[in-house]
Amino acid sequence: MNNNFIENIQSLYSDLCIEDIYPNEIGQNNDVFIVNKSLVFRFPKYKNGIIQLKRETEILKYIKGIISIPIPNPIYRSFEELEPGKVFTGYHLIDGIPMWKENLIGVKSVELVKGLAKQLVSFLIELHSISGEKASRDLKLKVRNPREEMYNLYNKIQNKLFPFIRKDAQQEISQSFETLLKGKAFSNLDLTLIHGDFGASNILWNPKTSMISGIIDFGGSGLGDPAYDFAGILSSYGEDFFDMCINLYPNGNEISDRVKFYKSTFALQEALHGIENGDRQAFDDGIKDYR
Image (cartoon, rainbow, N blue to C red):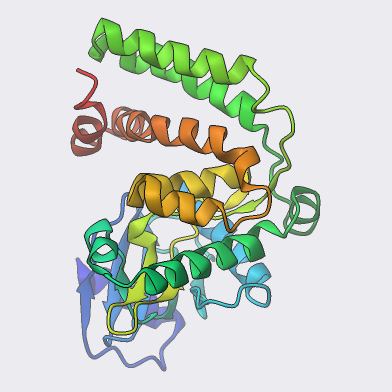
């Protein structure tokens, strides 16, 4: 299997000498390989993953000069034949390992934890400084309406997931969606460029220095609600660290209702992804607390 991937890389980049290649964690949408222990190559598995990778590559190029923390810089690219297996990007491996919740809990110095919060929020402030208007103009990104997207998500959850969800949980979900969608939370919303999947697996850190070393996987990036990125922090690290972060963000308290709402939809979104893409594991993981 690896041979096909190697051939496809070398047909375009014949001067890249591939000494070793091994699969990294298998992403939901991409096959990921580490080449020569120093390069990361990603091959989309599906047609819609190709469109996503193309968009992600354009976004990364666009924000390179704005973001001060290391992010992927796709120097190898193949978008000639738009079919799975042929399309890829490659970038220099960013040092660091994912900062899981237990890693953060293990940091005993309050100052260091504050430093981590500050680094993450600085990254978000830089990214969110790119207004929806500017990003949609420069990057031709689809303008999104978060309230509409949440209505659509709610419909899908009702149609596709409710048959697997116990009655009292159905009522809780409905109440949560209806309260938020009909209330004021979505009324003063400024769209910006967002990361879109800002959770522990995409936040790299150096355990020796307790510093963030990079942010990866911009596959979910696009125009959106800045609160969505904070929902990733809340979901990954819990209330205390989230509070520390939101307090460092300009007008953070204005978005925190939406942050909590988005977080409450994450497991359901995973279950939905599972149903729509025939991924049993994702479905089971997402639905388990609702059965």
